[in-house]
Length: 456
Image (tube, rainbow, N blue to C red):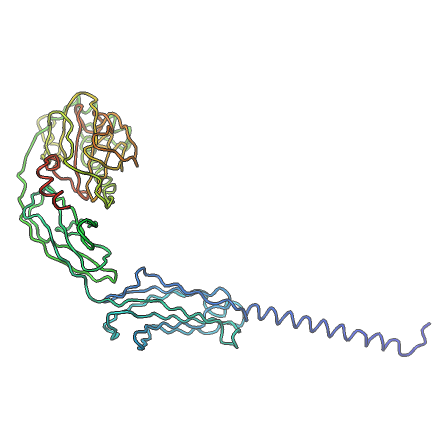
């Protein structure tokens, strides 16, 4: 039996330090957690989107600010030039709490800048973006990110000088426009009616000199507008008017009789590629000759939408030996049992030689298409650079592959009857920026020297 009256008191008093230490420890942990959440030192992030650092007459800049921890407190955007500061944007966000996420974690702002309205002049400027978060760091002022972006105010459009352009051009014909631009440009080229022909650099002609190859549609009736267009890095657009005399192409017509034998021979091939074909043989033929033809045309446009900027070809384009069977831009009327069932335009030249004759590249070029293409059958398309393409169709066999660079006369396939071909032959086309033009110009060495090579 313990008779010491102080023993119990001593035991109780010895527990107090432990309680105090525990309380202090909890307080330290709580404070640490609070400062980890609310006193973090991670600075906000700022990103400016919009590509070029040039400011034209009007420019929209996209600002993205983010802070994943305490959230955004404020954003300020100022445009400074020669000591003058113009406030473009100022935002303050209310505090939503005292821990993580006290402000928005991400903000996107579109800022419209019109230098002349702001009293700025052409020349260097700075875009200053200051962003603060809700951290308790920095004596409760939060983490601050200040970023400066170098800008150039440029409100003057570039100067365009046209140095070469064809005086005469005909429907289905081609030509080259050469022009000089006074400063670096983004989008540039030639607009004729509703067709835009992109330009490409001509380094041998000098700095800032560009060319654009034209190919007019066969059925163009008038040149309603024609100009060189250039947009500089600040988005300022300039135009220089062109004057060309148009020779309207004469209409050439032809009639083709479609018989049951032809339909029975060709429709199974199309049905294997287009199982959705239904109806009578004549209805199927009309669908192939219209809907599938249009889909094939769109595919060709897609393939010819991008061309190598450098010229891969040189000299006249080769022509396969053989007899011409159909000409460029012939207007065909399709007859069945003496009645008209359809009408189309033949956008190439048909050449018949020996059966399964070897087909060579008309000029040096890159293979950009080599597969079956509806009415064209087995088809190869070459990119000769600067918007020039050649097309070879109805092949019985393709002997090349996409990505292959072919020299002139290199074999790419054999003639055949695939697609909408009634007999073994080659359908050959030339396209300029997706427009089918008359191949006979490109077979003519004198025409090429005068209208293309002397200018390029």
